[in-house]
Image 1 (cartoon, rainbow, N blue to C red):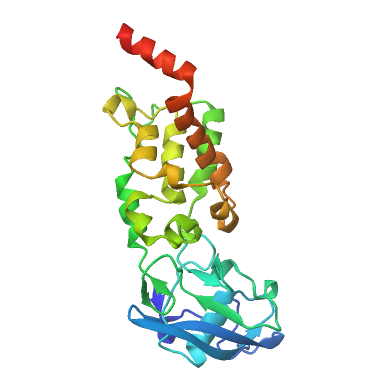
Image 2 (image 1 turned 120 degrees about the vertical axis):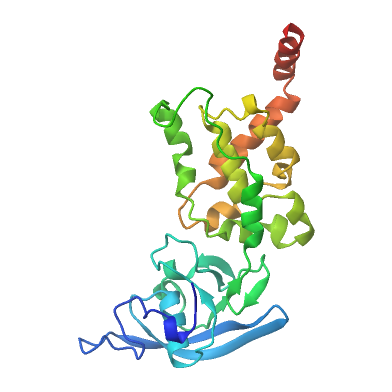
Length: 282
């Protein structure tokens, strides 16, 4: 949801907007200097505020208090406040983070806290960006193709195969990895040709799946990863892994193995020989 103060849903830390806890024991508070980006698609800039914060709070708590006390028209996207919906992505002191998972205690108290929208995506208003690019890329990835003749509930696979891709299923689609990836962050013209780490990870997951029958249906996941989704643009800087709130090893466990499979297929002479023999026998 995108909020203003009238529907900010409280501070999420058991406190009221005035820094008290509704008559219970007052929490220990301190003043925070905030620099928040205000504006829209036409432009904007940083506005400075001083806001009360309480021990144990996260950045989203302080942003909500700012809405409630000083900037009721501040736009910010959020939903669960539990680090599971991926809605409250922003850049805090220049680093892509979830506002609901960034504790104020982890930030220097003697310096301003700067909160800006994700830089890679177009701004709608204030801290809200248009992440439609990602949903467009998601639609371009062919879905899991079940084996012919098997019905739902009849799939059988080894636990080892399940474990290989289970890590990738933790993704909450916060798109922080998409935001930090310099291939599109610094080069907007790459967006049509590059799916980004989140969706290359999805392709790698499906390519690892022992029951995926995409090849039998004419979908070559390794070839499409390279030719249609821009796998070759990735230069494995691991910045996507560093910002992932679910601690998914995107680069090491998805992108690098996928690159190795593509390289083996295209350039390994033994693989080439095996494919050539199979074609001739066919």
